[in-house]
Length: 435
Image (cartoon, rainbow, N blue to C red; front, side, top):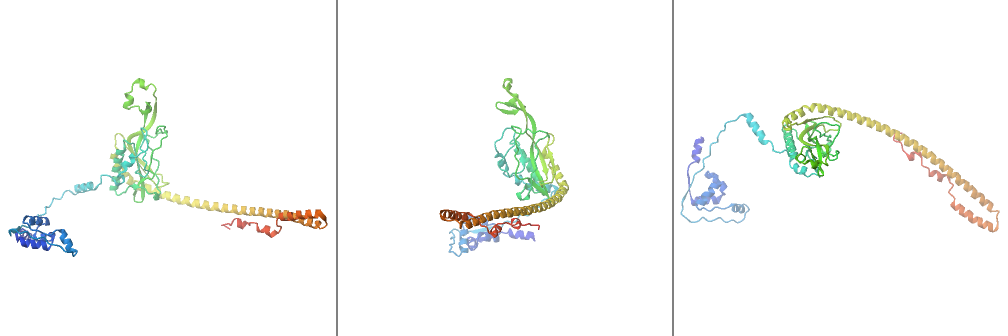
């Protein structure tokens, strides 16, 4: 059946110029061409060869909108017969199946991105750094960046190592990202010394601070969050002061210096970036004390340890989950103890305020009674003076009446109800919550 169909399609088709002109004027080329067994491009080439005009796309657009459209005229020439040979479909080639494992590996390799999305465009931000002295780490102005600590010379390698590690985690289904502020995760202090020492001599004055992102870089293994930090380590080297600055003792500048140039020179020790890196994994959840690290040496590069790091992180899930559960229990206990302490504290404060209100009210009442007593003494004095004034005549009486009038105007009211109304009771001073 298939060979018969191919033979039928491959048969020669002959049309006059007028017949082909009528077909291409009746419908667009894209619809006429399949009926002739060719493509629209091939049909346009045939029309051009035999000088057969056909309407363009604008004609069909105007026609669909109901606008007037004019057909092109058929040029007058010899009425040749147009021969059209339909194109025969090519049989599909069956490719030999390759080894499944090789095909799977190639597909996975092709789908793996060259750069992890978290690291796109971050190099520019890392290079926008504050002023640096020799032997210091980059201090970018941007605070929300992947957790990478490196010197300017080690930045490209740090980005490459982080990219390989992040892609390896992505292949395991662990999406690494910068933590959101709402998650409440924190970044632990990551040590930068390659060899632990009691003292620290980083920076020009041995007290320099190292930049750190505001939010940790984390990924989740199920419900267990893990924080990751990639840090270039420091090594302790001898620095020599020369020409107003410190240089490494083993640098070419110092080794090529003349003896007389080193006359007024001295040495000191300083921790400087060494070009080797450490990966630190930790629990970003507050209260969970878990961390582990892998650091490279001159014999073993960190890139070779990435598969081991991924396997170790997956194996640590259960241990970290146990620590998280224990912290949740301890946190609930601390919260309950704090609530009980707070309730007890509020009761004690309430009792203290109640006793204080009672004492203040008593003291105020005593002061009111004392003030009323003084006012009554003045009242009795003025009343007795008025009685005695009745027995006085002449100029003295007029003078004393004026004085009594002024004295009465200056007197305080002696109604005990007025005094009692100004008193603040204990209940008005403090209303107990626990009564």
